[in-house]
Length: 339
Image (cartoon, rainbow, N blue to C red; front, side, top):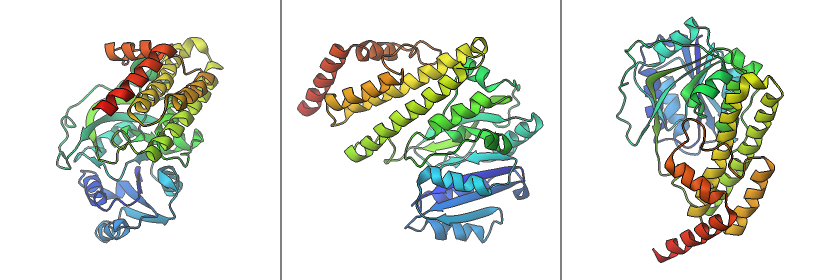
């Protein structure tokens, strides 16, 4: 078995069939890959839809469990996976047709720990054709720390195939948290990877729904998100400290990027405080937590490659000054009330 695709599924009756059919609409022999759907306590028709497809396709497996969240479902899928490579897919997303075999063959041929590719944000389920999967692209293999320093990385795990034995050797596990789990799993994997390749192939379709983090503005939702942002910053800080204990000369660019990404989570948190109904006092409490983790004030973001824009520089200038931040926050809140 070459590939195990793990899909956490919770009340996704309107998406799961589209997701699974996209994974079946591939030019790869079914004996080479398995699709593991972990039904995480769904109360809708998710299970029955998956069972209907299992009757027609022998490479789909269904695991039922009590609700443990996205992380717990991914962990369960990893436990039973037997493929040489792991791939995590979200149940409301889908894959471009006939893309998996090429990525998988490149990973196996080059004995890679991680292989990455492109994702496209969509609001439709009809974009099934890849823009460029038939093209041949040069393969450049490098260490994960070199890759972070030179090219950055996307944190979401659905950008990558990961060699399963390497994944286990890294002793990583998903936490039972709602948001941002990829933010500390992915950099750990990259920091330990010896053979990484990223190719500009159009593969993944990230479906933007009304329940996404950026669109849901309920206070309960945002409170959970702020807590998970703080946890992600803490885990990122732990990783940075562990890398700093190694060869600093080799990892200096990697460390700069990781520190910038840690600070970026603080920027995201502040921006979402602006758009929420939380008070400036509550924001200030979180900023003190970020200060303890050496993530605030901003020192590395947005100076590194990929983050250096006029907007980011302006926001950092304002957010690094407590008086400016206070005035801006209160002015924004007043403007929201007037409009």
